[in-house]
Length: 467
Image (cartoon, rainbow, N blue to C red):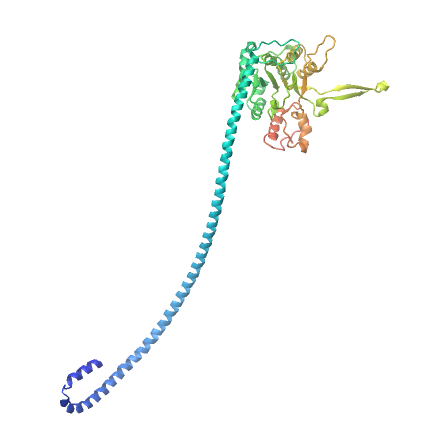
């Protein structure tokens, strides 16, 4: 196929350049040119017809491809739109989270600033408290020094107490220590304000996990620092010291008159001879049997205004503190009503006794009767205290005080009254003496569960009395 530009080139080469020479040739060439043009037109028609047929097929294909591409682009655009919308939502969510986080951070900073301020104030209070504590310590040290100086002055003074003054306690002294140097050394170590709490025990109660163990555990828990055990044998001393209680061993013989009253009562009867050693050295003693559970420091609840201060076997105001007991003797007519004073006995298992002449007289009279009589030590203890002088009998004239029966509680009061009274649910006794019941240790452990561990049902399994 010859293009138009090539044809023009050929014609330009064929035709002469001089116009005069062209004329004859032009006529001839017109016809040739016409024929050539016709032939060229036919060729172009054929060419363009062929190309036109091919172009329509290609256009159809291109149109279909264009539609497909448009559809693909539409789908892609829709997918991109969805992703764009999702991205916008995520962006908004992130912005919301960022805003919430910023708000939380601001609140946390505010809270932290408040905490820092509180800490600053607390530190200021601590510093102030430390200064006050140091002042209090200095004051306490000064008072203790004054007390020690006064105590030393009193000890250095000769004992010029007149015989008639039977109720003024005396103090420990170097001269008195000579009467029992070993015990005096122990008491100087243990006592506080010349007072000591004492339990007397032998191996029957001193085995690990026994009644003496329970007694010692609760004495220590109650904060009693001036407590000790008088051990009647080496094994008891060892067991007591192993549990962190000071023990002093003393050996005393049970009198022949007391050998048949039972080992417990016979051992209990020895306490009056033992206590004499303490009083002679100038120490007041809170004597405690080992069947007692100590819940508060008993020294914080004593009056110390009498020779003897003892717990009661009574269970209400009348029985503990005394009442007017009237006997009705109808045959006497007008004088049928005879009045008497009655008070339930002091319990010899818990009493506070001061180092006075009257107290020594009391102990000596009780010890003498226990050596001579086959009697119960508690009964004799009360007879010597309460029976008045008569005939050839002279009572020791001790001043006496009964302890608060609800603070220093016996087990009858506890099991028959207190545990059943809802208004006493939160009442905390000072000590509880399991003296009315023979199953002593189980009840002691139940008392600990009730008042130390807080088990309100711990006492429910026990009857009021003994079975």
